[in-house]
Length: 134
Image: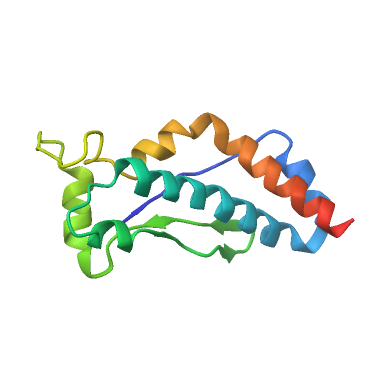
């Protein structure tokens, strides 16, 4: 199971990426990866229900995939626990989760909570990378 979010026409990012030249997609991939690993960490800490830890341990951020000018990074859950991951994420029926605040939408909730910060996180990562190559 994976959650997909698209970022299109982010102000300033396209101009900043031009500074990377041929390494623009690599830089964007790194920025997206760093940003989504922060979302992953928050999901695991605050939102994923834990019984034995199998679901939490299955969650990870994929390495960037580049297809032309499209860069993809995803937060995925499951592996052998994929059927369970989908049920827990999508089943909105009330349950008595062991830790309050955990349960359905355990990846979507932190992604949406950080929605306003994601662009800034991407900018910050790109700024750091630009500082490293200058």
